[in-house]
Length: 113
Image (tube, rainbow, N blue to C red; front, side, top):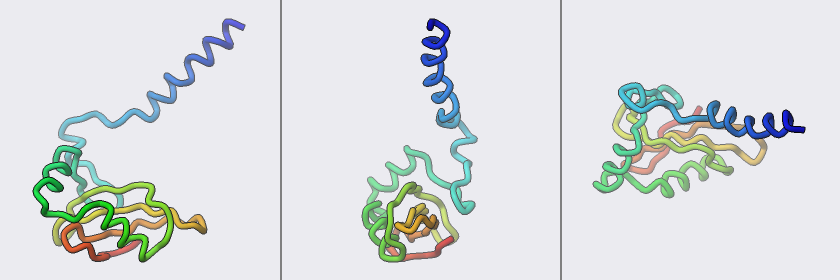
């Protein structure tokens, strides 16, 4: 019984180690997001949104849902070819997954994968 208890206590620690966030530093800043875009870290996202230079995430999600109804499961603010873009991963009601790219300044759809 004690062995089972120790095993059960170790599972959350093992899971936490598997899903731990990446180490901070230069690697996190230069990380590539979905579809190869260089994405901003939390501090950079806050700076961009506070400056008013980008649309709100809710507006980007609305644009993505007009293209593909479903649930947005991931959203990132990244550098695109012509400036900042939101890269949104959408899970459609039929189970399909798509990455939809929305211009973060204009709010228009840029692409889909």
